[in-house]
Image (cartoon, rainbow, N blue to C red; front, top):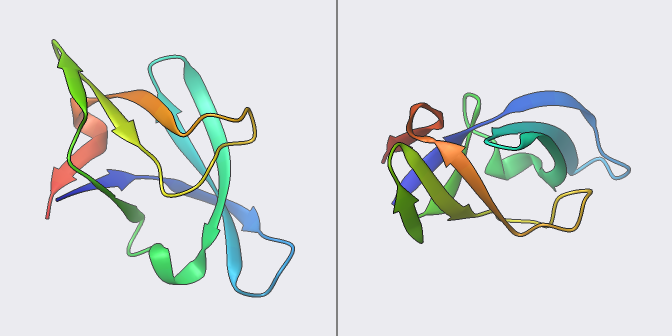
Length: 81
């Protein structure tokens, strides 16, 4: 299991949600997640699906604003659980 570094950027529409930003290889991606999913600036993402050098394809817990479920992130954005 892996966890992904995220940055809280605001509150969601519902009291149980939070808006976070993920630094991907293509730029910043925003998504809304459940507050309980956010732990000390990290969210669980499971194991990477693919790798290419220091980049890993991961599946996010929710869809981003752009409609992406999977994004490429740098190894530095991930930590093992």
